[in-house]
Image 1 (cartoon, one colour):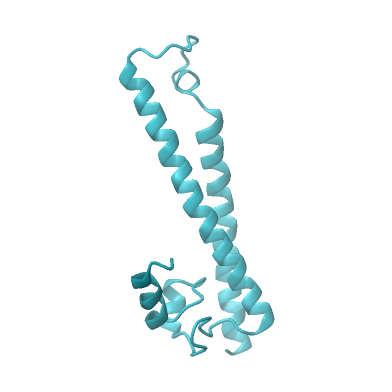
Image 2 (cartoon, rainbow, N blue to C red; image 1 turned 90 degrees about the vertical axis):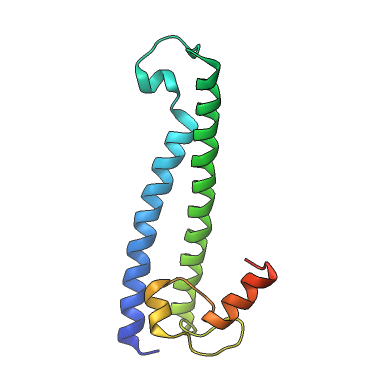
Length: 126
């Protein structure tokens, strides 16, 4: 890969990483520190209805699930940045072929070409 292309992808990855880190921080704060009473300004810790407890739990679990997905994406971005530094960015980690720029434009942190990613997905190796 040309140095100018690598620089372009590095800038995109760094920007994406910065944005995701902010999102992860905000979601962690929301999921772990904010309660319904704080959100509504209610001083009582007792929910109005049992369904509120279920809603709170669901929202917290959903946010934690999103947080986990964002963490996986951040790990993939870090891996892509390491591949840029080592000069292997744009090469499929599975078969060694060049990953098309159209795929890298869509998913700049992907380590796999479409064929290998499809094969891994069908085998359950996400």
